[in-house]
Length: 448
Image: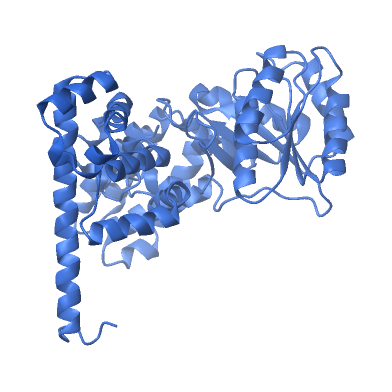
């Protein structure tokens, strides 16, 4: 989402680094570029004005003048102010001391409330909680059915009713149901409108009074830009929000809502939606987002994604196979599946520090169809062929191509890619064995 903003900021910082010593004119020129970049990213103009003023006050002060590397120090100031702009630190769900904790999701129609409710339930479930979903959008029958389908998918019970029933009563019964069956979190999916109206707000106000939620989270579509910020302000005035969930942060919008929402409403962004899958909801970390905006990567989020996707036992087995040179085609296909769980390759690369400056990386897209073809080709092989690809002759390749619905050239390509990966892993294994032999001979006496 922040590609254009990141590119503009990096170009500005490159010009700063080319100067040995910074004067006020240099700082003003750089901040003018930063201002333009933020406005083009659809950040609220008042937020931009205040942000630039804070950066300038610090950048023209003694802390930069006394620095050995003034340009780097200015970049550090911009980074720290970006973090503060987006909330300073992660804001977590406030759980009630007496379960169940009730979380109301509110927002306009089409913002993604129903899908977000299931994503949040899935996230909390992975964190050890026992959530219950309540379908309180009784005006839209499709919303009730959608939540039931998603609830079944993530393995969370859904309290549902018929179209036209009183939404406040449904929410109350959902909270009672959670208490009786030992659920510690209730997530209430409420009704939305195309525009804010008094009828909607009255219903949500009565529901809030009835169920006493610990959290009232506004779900807003980041693709709507400044409109999302205006909606957040109105909902906050009428309901008293405790936080915001931004959806579609993986889209092509300019990202201004993510940078403006917290400053305008005073309410923290608690979660962000980064894809369509039920696993694609993440806690919002202002420091990590600032790092990504400035093109400095986000290693911590990448590690967390990898840890969530990879099975520890499988990882140990794979390490042993690499060490003993027993890596097979089945392992090759399994690793592709594991990568797909982490997320799109372009998103992964954006989290690696410095990758945003590599030419062509921003345009790199993964062909999901190609990954599926690789799996289909491997699945069309016999167990013996997967263990010993050298036996795959011309007739076997034709059979595998027919069985996987691909071409012989595709089968050849997969076998060639597998041999390349296996060769790389063999080199790593050889390096490890050489290091172990050297250690046994006492070459590294300081290593145990």
